[in-house]
Length: 151
Image (cartoon, helix red, strand yellow):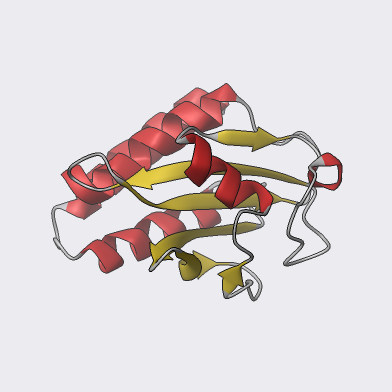
């Protein structure tokens, strides 16, 4: 199945699940679980949330994560600062990359916004495969995480 078709199916599945509970944390957990288990190359899938100007791990699937990301370093902070998704084909070429797990090879970060459009964190997905992510992932992951707030 091609990537767009897979994301279309996942979007529909997640959209249906969002109506069962309006709790943001439960919705984030569901998004992480579905993406992590349905997207073959997703090695680590989770959210980092801003708390008092700190980026703290929240709901995730995969190996143990860094609990707090060093301020203004790494891919997640780059996405937060820019307000746009960041696609990294090779994390070892990204200056300031924070290696929570040495098996990670590529990464995508999509800023996570609240009802007012304020960035409150980021969805972070790692892969063990180089160049695993592209604009299709960026577009669809953005659509999927918007379901957490907009149902």
